[in-house]
Length: 235
Image (tube, rainbow, N blue to C red; front, side, top):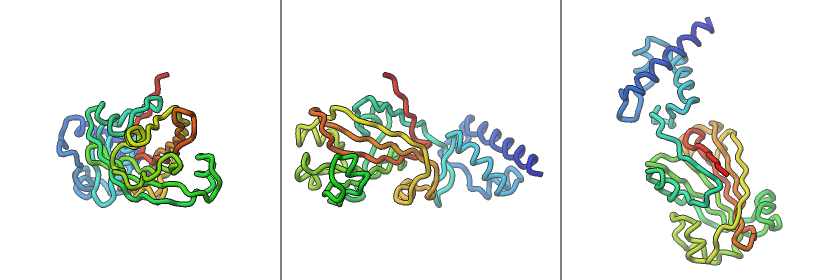
């Protein structure tokens, strides 16, 4: 019985993929699960398995309480390029936007303190932002900054590029970075902002940045929807 269900899910996934490739859902959104179940004469369980197969391939994506959508092209991300989010999107013909969730001074926990080469409990700036591509939330990021380098920064317009702000306001440019990229479940703090259930697959990128004098100035903790990003590095 299980093998029959799996085969049926495969067949439904193939049929849906053919319809997507033919441009049938040009509005960008799939019909509701009930309508699809009736169209394929199958159960919701089998349908969801078929949808999950296409989701795993990056063909479609799901948003809580909104349904299933055709996945747009992934954003190409080369960590070796010192390009900021908005510029990177524009270079690929995409529209980026940034929403500031919060900006405050906090006490550095042990992992952030170690990344910034500070003592645990030292004061740091914490800026939480949600970033969108073509209106779709794809990245939740927490920026932790050593305030010694950026006096008064929290009063600035933090929807703009921090890269540009560092350079234009403080004369600070990136002089190097360390990246750690790990797949894993999205934490509770990031998942709702990205319109997915906590524990959904995601990609965490931690970046520790140095200035032109090789001093550690900030640490970014990025949480990406796994279906929104392609990391492509050419040295």
